[in-house]
Image 1 (tube, one colour):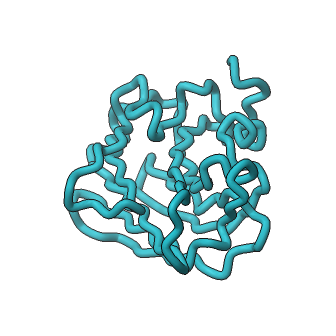
Image 2 (tube, one colour):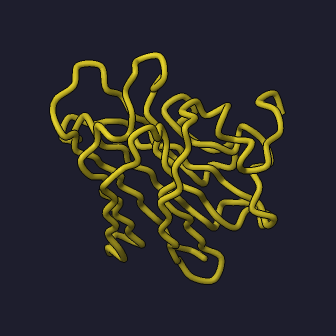
Image 3 (spheres, one colour):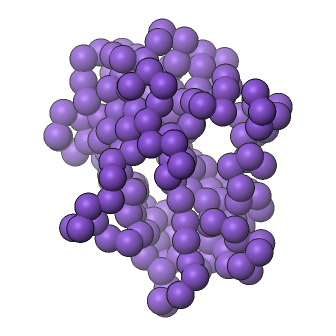
Length: 171
């Protein structure tokens, strides 16, 4: 599929919070719905996938503090990759004693070749949840998104990856 996909994730806090920090992770999954290696994640610390197919866009002045954007070029991904799981996690949630419940709303926009194909809203978060699986993007024959609202108490990506088949962070 010779298309470009753009993902925009933004969130609003219920009230301003000095030390609130959340991050968006794109997990590039194989045909078995597993994360093959830790290098198959794109996020604030790893801005692009090794195939060159997924990029976290740098924050620009017009972006809000609570917004992250990604560009995906599915045709650059090896055939074994079929979907991307989108997660949002509160940074150091346990240490800072901050949870998803500080967020009023999360908004996820998906574009294909600059045309918006969907907007998804998430709210009413579980009190002690620290991360949320927002959904799964598939793109082999056509672009589709399956929204989810799967909560986890873990917030560190190394603690979340076992849910996606990665047994140790060193893989």
